[in-house]
Amino acid sequence: MNDSFFKAIADNNRRRILQLLKTNEVMSAGEIAEHFDISKPSLSDHLKILRNADLVAAEKKGQYIYYSLNTSVFQDMISWIMTLTKKEEK
Image (cartoon, one colour):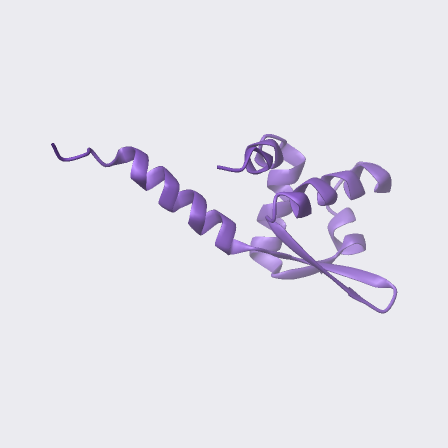
């Protein structure tokens, strides 16, 4: 299991970013920033942590970077959690 996933979701601002991307599918960094009262460098750091954990994808179009949710990582995490809840047969 990748520890960067847990680091990424440990922060409330990053969880809010994920929720925004769930609702809006694709957003620029500027559009995301409109929902936060934090500096742009701080937001950039949050987005970097989310990218490093593969929770968001980033695509550069012209001068803007657009972010979207990478649901496959969440699906992998759910599968892993489900293995923990199943009792092994003897």
